[in-house]
Image (tube, rainbow, N blue to C red; front, side, top):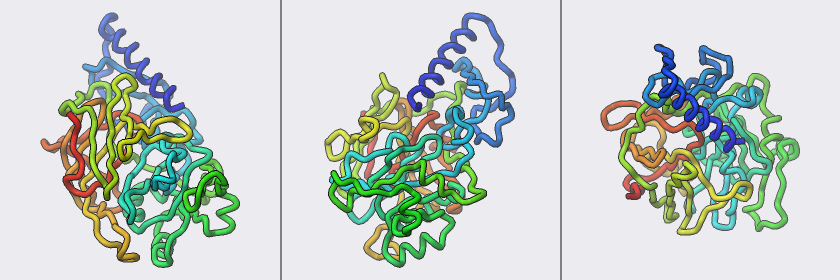
Length: 357
């Protein structure tokens, strides 16, 4: 489904660009290149429009998914809340299931290398996992997703109290009712604790009445927006001893991931890939709930690098409160625009990631 949507976007872009250059058609004079959330679009006809790249018109007329900027293909999916699943990244947890289905994946430092907060909205993954425990850093990090569902395997008493007291909708495997109705199960072919899975379809069914969809977390590039930045074939770095590398595949238009020099694969969908890699420089401090656990400070500001379509844009991230999305601006103070599609966010300690030539 994701590949089809992307092909539709690219095909429409080529077709309309050709029409504009050869047929003398005039593009509309007023529009915006920023892709709004489905509830704020002015034209709900649902048609996909990709004007000439030199124009200033929107890419889409009709609703878009807020976490990807791609056209809505399933109105029911667009209306559901965001679902965040904490996914294990221990070597024994690979290949995981669902990383290529998530709209956004946050990679955060934990006590041993990294763990993923995979955010599902436009698509789901049955199964998804392996699922592991949450951290207090998830409370601030995920606050801008409008009270998302949060699927996790539990935590120590202090962490559990903090998460259960937050506005995250806790779907904890320790709860017998949630465990059964959320589709949690253990994979007999995996060694514990790297063997807990669930299904996003059943997890979404546990959404409370009134649960609402997320707001957009990033701004996206429209057909008339210049692809700013410096050429870069990818990015490599280190989080707590884990060597991470993303290389841009121009033929596929995506970044491909390796971990510790080995191709990182998703059991459902081949090599882990994404349309955008966002590197946010953050400070880690000991968690107040568990001093052994690092806690990313995601409210404030720091350096940022955005990798998209084979270029890198350097800038700054700012965030006034945990309920606000990250604001990304380049070194000239202009908004950094991502390519419509899936995004991977690296929460990295300062100076740990560098562009590839």
